[in-house]
Image (cartoon, rainbow, N blue to C red; front, side):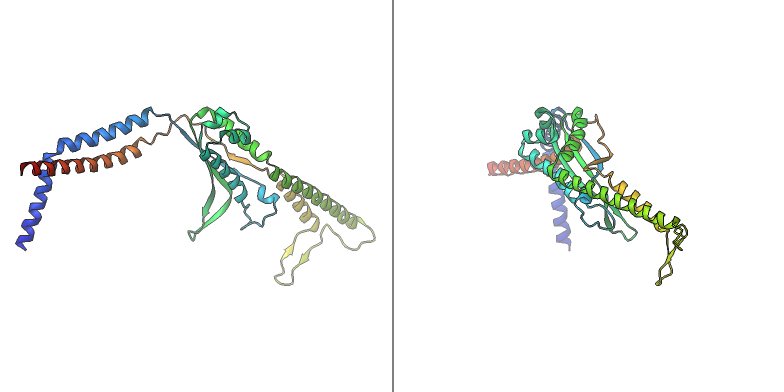
Length: 283
């Protein structure tokens, strides 16, 4: 037990003496590494981060079955993320064409990505919402507004989206016409002197739970309004647009800490090598 205590004490003593002998080297290398990365981050071109909350009616156009009565936003999210592929390839001509912006503005897009927004229920389970978020990094804050408008152009001119939207609008128009005809017929029945049914007070009861169903004319009016509301769905709508931020993102703290740690370990390696070489020369 005594030998172990002495051995541990000797190890700690050697470590302390090692740091004491090489403290100038360790401190100088560590601080130099941190200073270099801080200066580099400060003077390198800045970029600006912003985000927008949006929704899309594309899944309604496609008649995709809704999950928990929530619009599926997978197609819209994929359309946004497809732009990031152009950014990665530095295909700025393609970006310029898709977003209807200049080639110079396209070169200032550093990153663009969409992600589904989720909600958490009381059981801590996550569920989709009808909205998603677009995250944007640009090198020039002045182009944020142009990109926001460009995304609307990108969605509103997409041939696939337009084809389904036109068909969706056409079918909604036909549904509204059918509902209006049905309402007219019901009103005719209500006022028809030969009819013994008073449609203004007509009620239907379910045999299963005796639940009252509303007046059929009111039901149809509500259905008509619902279809009209669905007609307001656009390929892309901003719930909250991009904030035109003026605060540059430089990640000085993250990079400074990382390089500081790496510089510290590098200084230890250099100090250790120097001591080994010094001992070898003395022999």
